[in-house]
Length: 290
Image 1 (cartoon, helix red, strand yellow):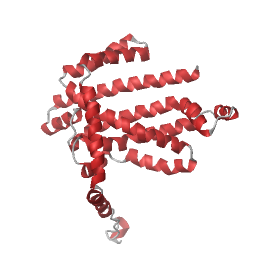
Image 2 (cartoon, helix red, strand yellow):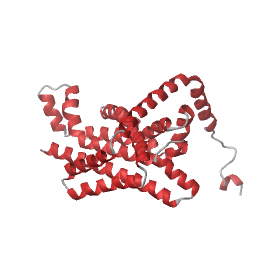
Image 3 (cartoon, helix red, strand yellow):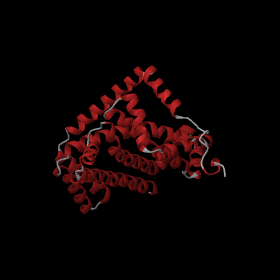
Image 4 (tube, helix red, strand yellow):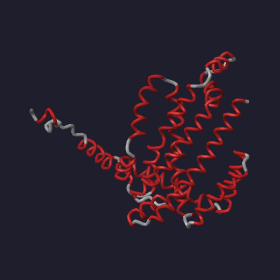
């Protein structure tokens, strides 16, 4: 029995490594001014967000979490619990690193919203465009997260700036997908009623479709935030500071306690943000039902 019957023929070789490497090298060589401009913009954005986050007193942030949780859930127990969990991050000595992590997350989510929302609206307007974009979004969501770090680091260097790009690419698909889905799921009779009263397509989109789709869009933002948080540890591999770097250091040094402290802090951040954004979704749904 010939070898090719059992083993894949070695002479059949699809080489995509060299073209991809050559393309990245071309971008680094020819588009360096463009990527320098992006780096300066993102560094400025991170500095501004970091300036604001670092100057929020620790106690004020805990009070804000308490008030927002109570307003969203009307449950004093949850408000106390989430405030205590946030306080525990400071008690672990990780408050400063948490601020750095929050800065990266906020910057990534802002860019994701600025890109994802208009693209989602555009995709919702065309079945052909939706069919074209869907496999791209599937690929972006299923691609191993480490892969995004390679071109980001090559084009933008190491540190927090390429982490924002890599996190945005990884986190933006849910927002595009759910924005498009939410607008598409708006009751057809509501849209027809708006058109019957003289609304243009643009007015129907702004005053009817988007408001009706707000809960679904907020769910997309929630998922984007969760995916951005999940990239924190991964991005530490390209020199990103914050809680993710603390986890990476603990792995390299085999310090389980240090790793669990940072890991628990990341989980606490995720839980608090998830609950707050879910509260916004529920309020939006209640407002639409009324």
